[in-house]
Length: 174
Length: 431
Image 1 (cartoon, rainbow over the protein chains, first blue to last red):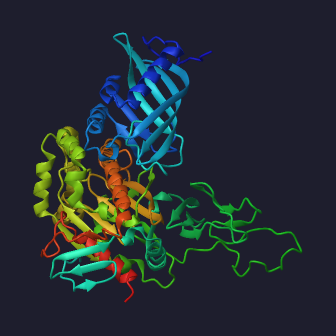
Image 2 (cartoon, rainbow over the protein chains, first blue to last red):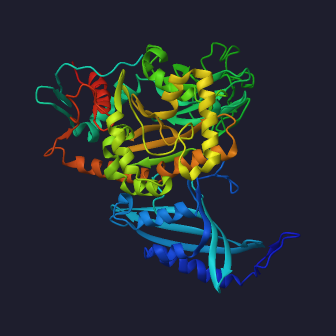
Image 3 (cartoon, each protein chain N blue to C red):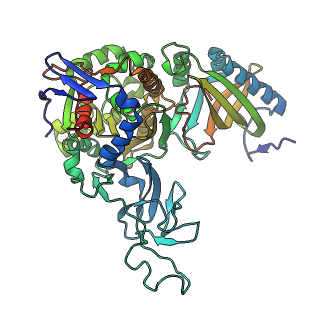
């Protein structure tokens, strides 16, 4: 059973879909990332969306106006992140690393005015220069159905790690 | 006062060669990959030089503490009940377990979990032992207190340690870098603070590669082309043109004792006093107010230097304070000859309004750190160079000659790195 918490008094027109529909969407997203189909990945986001990776070990409610993150992209910077990653001059990712994104423990957390909050655990592997690094953590999404397609309103990836040793960087989309 | 660079006599060492007649400055790649040289660096550099421990604002109240590894040694940086700052080795005097095992907190004392020995937060032994096991005056002579790091001194809120009891004072060691630290510390009437959320990451390369990279204007256009593309779009103009103009005006300054800074004017916004169109009229108004405050407090000339200049400073051996699109404090401690642990923090004015803090942090993240548009490419370059140095036997030398014969080298020359290497050679080459 999926436990859906409705905030009392929340105004929402956003219907909550079945968990499997969100899972299909998240698996699709992971497949796009593994294939480096980044333009299509970016199209999953609504205009004005945000993408954040707080520092490892940060609390879930960390605020990018108060604390230093690794990534706190507004939509403008997110578009540039993808433009950059598509370029051979993003030296950290050229030649391209191989990535494998796995998504598990998908849960629906609740519905709000701007969309439905969905979370998953993740393990992402990045292989580059003969070394494979592992990133582990939880994704927090706000997802909304627009024009009959699910879209990402916000994505926050919490790294359940102490720091970026030995990974060294988050130059891929985890 | 900092002095402009002066000619240095010729020196030919085993690892650092300076030949002004030929206009050549070379560093042996062996110095980056040799484990024997790394061991020697531990003895002659990391056990002798002042090393950055942390900032006063990381411990806001009495009894606050944090644990930190500095140059391979586990330490406690804390304030005792009276509010005094201390640095202890994080090791129980009894059988050696670490007495503080959390990253930070507030503690009146530290208790070792292994056998229960306890200590006040001023390091004093504070364990009640059962009768008959130890002499009655056991520990009264301080022999089982927490061991203090031999030296702990502070300049403008920046706390440094030294493992050498006989070292010169911190102020003497910092020499002319104090003036550049002042240009950071003076930016706010309320003082400057470390912002929450430090970035800790590793790089598979020698630590000296990161020191060189941290104040290397020469690499920016090639390594960071994608950042400047983003910046041009963000500021609504050609960032590269501005960068070229900056080459003319910039300069490298020898701060003595191996410290150096490059100073110039770059195309990005500065949270202290250079607005960019995307910050809008609100941003411009905030910047005007900051400028007016600086001028009123420090005078027009100093305000101009603080506000309009960008500075990348290396403090020998392993501290960088870069006052650029944001302020970053960065230490990089070697774990081995080929592995660095980097700690990076952002600094801002105490009490900075939320929107201005957000602009500052955005500025930081767009360039700096493991998820920025620039740092990951630096890391790739450093790791690539380190792998390349595996060829040292057949391709033995790095060339660091750029601008060697100029009267006033700029950001885009390599004089700042030569300042570092001359000090490194002085300490490392057998005379």
